[in-house]
Image 1 (cartoon, one colour):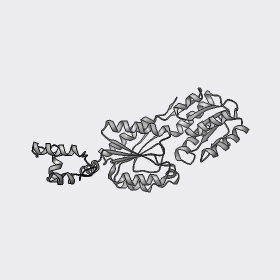
Image 2: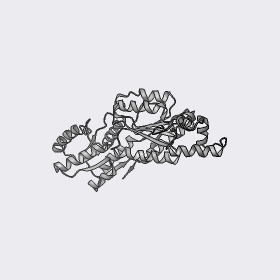
Image 3: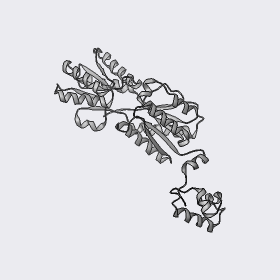
Image 4: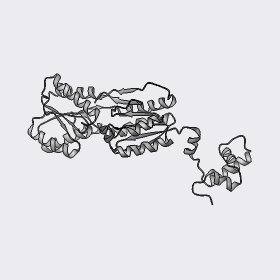
Length: 328
């Protein structure tokens, strides 16, 4: 009895032919007679035979699969990066296997271990928050040491033996803060952030502080940081109720949206906003200008880098591509 997903061995026994003959018949080899090929192919169709692509990949030495690990699929930024990666890989004959770490170092390590087991030719990853904060990259180092091409995107790390795609977080933050000061005439802007523990979050904070210093503004108590939204809500309510805030720079999407929500609930004076934010939120505030990270472009560049490394793994230099941000 042939099982739901038949194997070459089972077809071989059913037709009393060698596995080699079955395999060559299914690949339409000229070594096999037409009558035998027709017999084998007809039987294979009847029992819904499908070739084992993973086994074939092991024989060939490559899979034409790329693994992707992202912290969240709910964040529109990562969704757009995924679209950019998938489009470029599809155009170049590669398939994408996507995993979601949910900011967990443990889940991330598990997925890296699975992907490193021969399922993919290369890996693209935005490291989880837990990994970035701990600065421990054992599983990633292991994968790189085994010769698997790996590309990091978005979050900065101290890893040296891999390519990366980032933006200029400092410059984007500096320019956004100057927009509040110069274009919105803000005298008392604050920064809100949920990523203060991450390296790119620290760069954004530095850009904000340096812009204030350039215009001789006080930098005392001007950054509202938190590790979760509840903590951020509590801190923001206290500040917006007591402090004459006229501008808010959001270092990340969720923090900026939280500030906008709280301001509306408190019905405080008009406040100008800017920062990193999903484009769909523009409708909430017609005057809002946000930093567009060109997520699709970031994904495309990450895909380009991993394929370049796959096709020429002897390249000694590692590259960091900086994607240009836009103010929209």
